[in-house]
Length: 337
Length: 219
Ligand SMILES: Nc1ncnc2c1ncn2[C@@H]1O[C@H](COP(=O)(O)OP(=O)(O)OP(=O)(O)O)[C@@H](O)[C@H]1O
Ligand SMILES: [Mg+2]
Image (cartoon, rainbow over all chains, first blue to last red; front, side, top):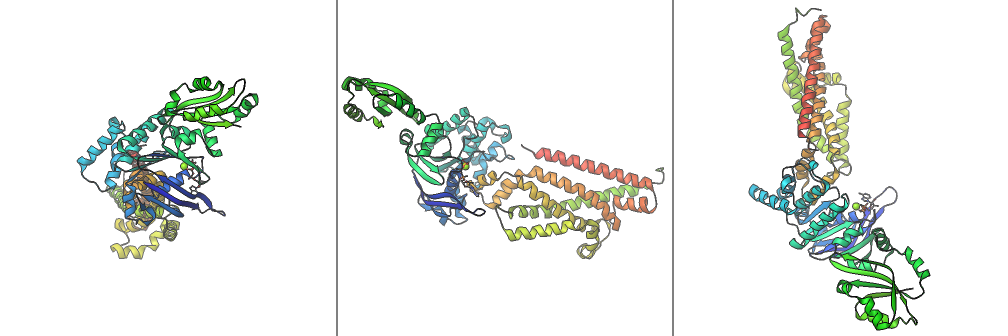
């Protein structure tokens, strides 16, 4: 669907130039929700703005459906952009237009003039985002969540195949954030819409995304399925972003390790194994007992997971059979040194 | 001061002349100043049609015209005015210099009003596939309409007082009356009446402009 190849963006600066994107390679599949996370200034906005050419790359390519964006003429570019909807942190609605006029604006831009058809389309979109009652209100009268719903309806007006979301929930409270994320997820399912979203909040990634790329100083430092990244983060930036989102942190581990007498194991259950009484079974089979030192259970998107840090205790601690047991049950395990 | 020998018909005519002079000049000042201001804005740094040469050129013209004192402009423009409309006196003769002085003023105000439009809107429009033309007419101008009306009001008020100055070289209107009767014939009563009328006129203009601005405000 979208291929990003060696994408580099340099902002000329006073004195030194600023390397905002450094040879980014990414591939985004049709129908998936792809998250890009990173700290402030990592280059997230620059990256997503290169996807519809609001920003011109310094080098490298962006291909949408095999079409290289840099080869598009000034006439072709608007057509291509109509296939890529975009929503923004600060909504960017037109204040002088009503909700309905905001939503019909992209239809008119696309050269559609049949008023009845436009009205029907607008009504359907407003119904979909739950704002039918606000058809003729002006944006100034809406709450943040409602404004973002208008933004979403507007972005969907020309039935794009991709939705780009630049921190769409960052200006909203947690409750409203959840409802907007839910809406995005529903739209993704119903319309098979590919969504590329950037955020600095891990919780957004966890709730919504299928895959994620972690961006740091303009570079992709880690990319993969969200569950993998969450449960087995490799890069320091990923770990610290996770730590801030309330996942057990590494600092406490040092203390735990000093207290423990037996070997420490980190066990990760994903999907069905989450529902099994596996620790008890392991005790039955191996004679080892397990002391849970730390743990978290929850859901990543729809997938249940559990991650436990356990200490193996027993008269003669022989860890081999236990590891074999966990391997058999598809429980990811890691001996914590 | 008694008001017995005030020539009321002449005052009435003066009022009409002032209204016509400033009204017609305002229309032309807006017609010229609006595109000029839009171009000034769009050609500016990091704007949609960024072009240093164009921006610097327009800016120099605007600054140049605005730095000439109006009374000088009136005189300097006489040959041009005669060429354009055949006379340099009367209501018609006052209009060209008024327009030439007000248009750059309005253009500058327009540029400032447009700068207040959130840049995010241009991003949104471009992302929706809008061309620059569509952005100007679909977003930039409608979004800044209240500001543009307010700027036109300011320009209109300036035109009322400038039109009085045009009276000094035989432009007609209340200013002309004030000078002829009040200054040259020492008829203080005429002076008082014309000034009072101008004050009321400006008040009314500002009030109407404010109402209109508010009417278009959606924020
Ligand atoms: N137009 C610009 N001119 C110069 N430098 C820029 C420009 N836009 C962004 N930058 C710089 O590029 C870097 C990346 O910016 P970007 O906006 O992509 O970061 P971000 O990850 O979206 O951050 P945030 O989370 O704060 O939005 C920053 O250091 C920023 O200062
Ligand atoms: Mg950003």
